[in-house]
Amino acid sequence: MGHATIEWVYVGAVSALLIWVGAAAWDVERVLEHVPADAQTIKVIGQQWFWSFEHSDGTKEINELHVQKDTPYRFEITSLDVNHNFNVPDFTILMDAVPGRINTLWSQFDQEGVYLIQCREYCGYSHYNMKAQLFVEPKLETAAAETAAAPAVAPAAEEQKPTGDVTLTILEGAATQGNPDYDPKELSVKQGQTILVDNVDAMPHTVTSGEGPSDTNSGKIFDTSIINGGESAIIDTADIEPGTYNYYCSVHPYMTGTLKVE
Ligand SMILES: [Cu+2]
Image (tube, rainbow, N blue to C red; front, side, top):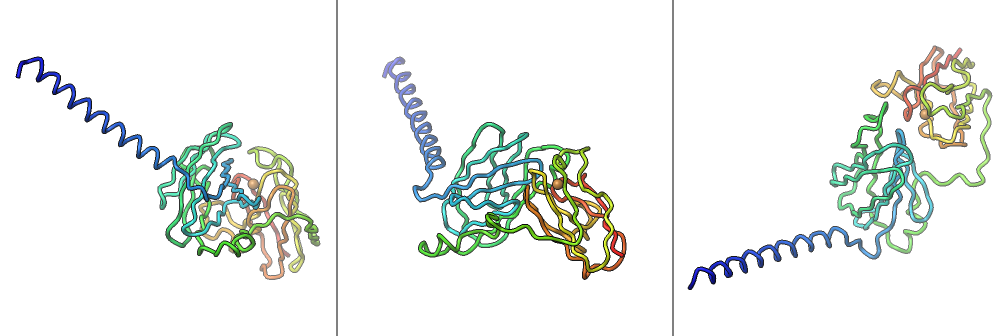
């Protein structure tokens, strides 16, 4: 064979190899992009410093996400403020949550259990505490799934606001550091009285006993857990020993107050 011929064989072989590698890569890409037709959509919204989720039937959850085992889900991920990253380490889910755009990925979960959801993009003051829980529950049969799949946090439609002996208000704008938050900052009650915690802000907040997120005794004396914007919760002081207790908001730990039980 002449010199030129060998060169052409070589060029041909290399080209074929490149085309094969390219096609294989494209195939992998296609598999990743291919969302199963029966996938259910879950909207994932990151905000300083909590996660909210909206299921295709309209149910919303905050810092908790309930899904069913072996069911494909398509996640539409976004942010309402700064950049976050939606990360479920146990299922190698990692996707930027960026304001003004929707990133999608799909996944399904093959193990029942409770798993960590966290933010993997530094997003400010309480980034390290921007965590949620993923509950992978048994797969329900399709007929029952419609109703039974409804997660724990149902939309509070015509629910009547509860009343309490005293009111603790979470003020509008409280989520922004430096703004007035709890009103009154120091609340005194008599043991046995009930406290209506009225969240008039648009953001979710909590009233959680303790010194802050790193306090291992957090929430042991009282904890409203998440109160959505415009909603309220009751703290019953019947079982709280007289004393003075610090509390904070688990979503915005710079929000603090004191509860005195007499
Ligand atoms: Cu808060």
